Image 1: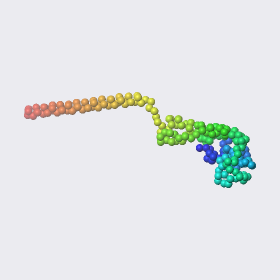
Image 2: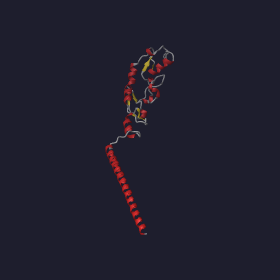
Image 3: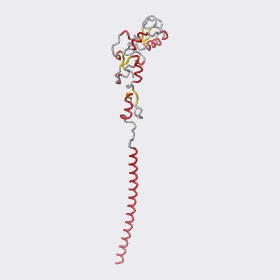
Image 4: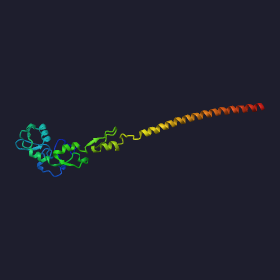
Length: 204
């Protein structure tokens, strides 16, 4: 996600540079600072490579400044200008995401490739939140509500559950024994009541 949507192909916006860039170093097609500058052969008009390539593909095969015949194959690389531009300090493509770095234009690509502010997505299932690359591990293991948790006391928990299961089995056995005893006592009581009843009947 670059600072300017067009910068993936075309020139660099002025606001990205540490210092103001002279207007002589701006492309007359995109009006931004040259990116990969190329010039026509005879009059040395300079453009961004992507800008002039697009122009030649869509329009006639002529220089937009002097109308000389031009093709991508006949474009020249202005070495001195390219060297000068490569040393300019420019901010990161991910400055809008918080990256504070300014680097030389020639080192920008390498910096962007390793920048900790590059957007990545959380890999936890059902999350998919976009975060900075440098925050990925912390987000996935600490912050994310969909993170996978590690049980550090599983052995102890399993031991406690085992004891509880044993206690429940023992309790079930005690309850069953108590019920059997109550049923026996009830049967004995009925016998006693029956005997007493028969004695009363005989005495009458």
